[in-house]
Image (tube, rainbow over the protein chains, first blue to last red):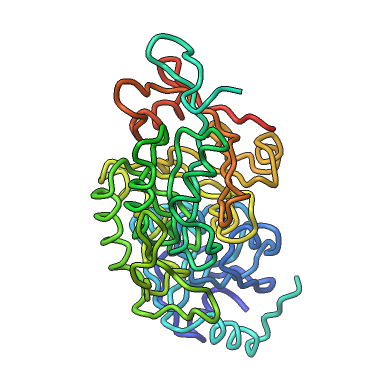
Length: 115
Length: 263
């Protein structure tokens, strides 16, 4: 399952993300709004689901080399966060749905928490 | 140990003990003993010269504590502990009641329209300077305001105050827990650590704190948790210590300083 396939399957709004990053295969998933937990728990190539949209989200995604970030519950990106995501090329995907709903759908697509 | 007004370090500067994080009975989680006269009496016992009243998302007891301190050597800073959108607690410190009430308007406008549940969270008492009951604050205060950390820090600065990230070493309601590391370029005046750690330990664990002033406060929800571990050297005469002077002290300007003194 690639980033592009997730975007299509879940009908996500793509805020950022370079073309070469959209074909990346997702290794697993992680969901938390505490960035300290994400830094300890998410793995290379994971999709991360959160409702946080702070600029540090981009820094953490970049640090861990995550495949993409899905930001839930209609949270919008501010200019600073958007700018950093563009600069790093990281796919940031937006949805009105809750984290629970998004994770359920990812699970149905075969994405697992283990990595 | 220096007294409340401390020793004169050099011309015009004085060293004063400070506790910049004290709750009153309007914080639902505070003990009923946290009323203005008892807070001031405890501050005097500890030799504190600066005390900041910092209730959760409200400042409705600040004026009462300031009045209770009249005639003492204690300067009561007008503060609030805001919970940001990211669930990070930020101390917001001002000189005057007018400033903190202006800030309170902003915070109230960003709190959800929910009532406090006393059974779950505790009662929120607004009191006068003697500690007598005035009214209940019926808002749900123990929740996040829809303001980002950046918006909180900028808003406080715009009103002439300063912002300090509270108990960053804790697992809950800490900027470092919520955001993973200190966001670069966030104009915080300092970070606060809890009584359960030391600046050395906090720095060893969180590299992003390097270069930031670190203070330790009691985060007192009961009288026994108030503490005098922060020694502030600043200009405190003839005018009483101000937030501006505290800001300069945190930056170590002109011989001013903020030291952590274990005891």
